Amino acid sequence: MGNERVDVAVVGGGVTGLACARTLAQAGLAVRVLEARTVGGGASGRNGGFGVRGPALPYVALPFPELWRFTERALDRLAELAGDAFRRVGCLSVAAAEEELVAFRLERDALVEAGFAAELVGRDELPRVLRPHFLGGFLSPRDGALEPGRWSRRLAGLAAEAGAAIAEGTRALSLDGTRVLTDAGTVEAEHVVLATDGYTLGLAPELDALVTPARAQVLATAPLSERHFDCPVGARGGWDYWQQTQDGRLVIGGWRDTELEREYTTEDEPTDSVQARIEEFLRRLFGEVPPITHRWAGLLGLTPDRLPLAGRLPGRENVWASVGYCGHGNVLALGCGELVAGAILGREDPLLAVFDPARLGL
Image (cartoon, rainbow, N blue to C red):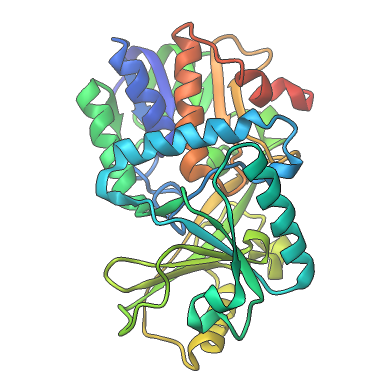
């Protein structure tokens, strides 16, 4: 409660904001993180738990192939910091049509030629329950499974240990220069970082015009009696995704495209209709719907070119943003949060030119 002055105010207590705050605090700056809910209470802690390389674009479509290496480095950092909240077990994409298999082959060939690990998986190598429904797959062996809630809280602990002050239950209401008005007081800062991804609405109108919030819905079952999946699995180009946790639960999400206009929203509560479609897929796989114990949703931020916005906001002195991960925030949020912190500290990375918000006409 009350007013304060700090070097940097970070709006958003997800992975982006916590990674940024930790780096700044390690450099000796006074940092305040403002989180409207609890740490990881948005999409950072409420997602399907995929730790994957690459942005939302496939490697063959990347305008700057160095982006892939950037995400590999960020994934290595995640593995280093997350401890047992991350398991490097690979990630599998599956194809239900021949054209998807063709795309998998092109992607595999391009990645291998560039020196990255990628493998094709035949139908008889797929998990048994998937063979009746899918033709084959594409394996990224360096990717893995993440427990996003545990990872968010662990990163918050690391940021706090470095000296960052974290205020949960403190919503940023408006921004006046580098003064952040909250529902508990005003924070004056030399720099402000907007680290809110799909939850940015209202803080910077220019970002509202470029970042579309979209709801991603997930459910979790009780532990299954059999282990069906050794690694996370994605289908239909990433629209659908699931993994089996170490205790045997199935965490599964997606099907947003079946009601796309309705899922462009700022509401992050599950809906009966999308949840029913997820259950329908479970019934196809197993013949019945396993007992369901949890349902949740989070907001992801979509950008027109499917690349993040990370850097200074044009026309706003010392106001920075790192948002718009298009569903690949588990890894990009860590990398981009640290990039923005480095820029504030005077260590601007050339990749910031790729993520510069000004590229989209701001």
